Image (tube, rainbow, N blue to C red):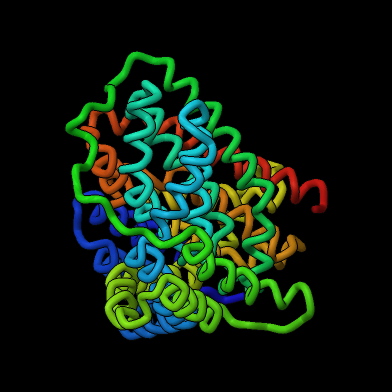
Length: 420
């Protein structure tokens, strides 16, 4: 096979993008400029580089369209108070004695029904900090419970990263979500264990200043709050159950409409949809930028060189999936960007090596949750801000987060080796 760009050029382009992201240049622009530099440095010439970048971004359009419509569900869940009600109900039912468990499960569920992980943490944070203070836990334990629960929910959710991976491997979204149920449970268990260990350490405590003081919100009933997510689950489950395919493009907005109806806020639906769009537009633009550099890398000889290196080291081809997810997410400090670049670049290589598409996608997806929260990304700062935690203390949690992501990755690899 003839490749249009050299491996060195692709690596230079990726390095440029990473450096720019670290320097706080807008990530989409960083990826686009990195793709341009990588293509030219890789010997493709300006015209070929630009056309490859455009074709790479065009390949992301189906994912972008589904992500844009997913904002309807996310916006409605947040604005109607449904997400907060679900979290509140879980925390209340499990009680103060099981605070860590309830916080982790609440964040996992909020994220798994289609709320982005950073927004899920921000939504749960006021409730989590309040119950954490009553139980005598420190901020680190509470924040890790939220982040770890969010990571567990993220790999079984109809969120941008899952959509992008399923699109790259041409696998049904529902199947991709279900594939990582066991790794998600493993991640949840590891989160709870690590959070309890952190809770025993003398660390920054939760004070009254960390608790939000605001008027009592009128939240919907729990039944109304879960109606939208349940509709989404039922619609997406029709394909594996009775072979009726309902695309996420339809299922996710339908869940948002049902949620608005059930909570009695249908008159505000336009407002909620606009809010949801404002939350997904950033990641949609990011994916377009991601597509440009993914296009350059995919058209380079990097894939074959990586496979040759694995063979030289006597390593099996499947190892490429989790490693690619880990490295790309760490480089971009984004689960979505990392899993997208990795899956877009190596999907054909992995399936060509005889690895089932759904297993390869699952290993990339879980791998992308290991070091995706590094300081050059927005997730690090958004979650630290949600717990009113300074950068120094926020940095201390990264190794624990990595252990959570690594546990789900190892579980996903084991499932593949067992043929499950």
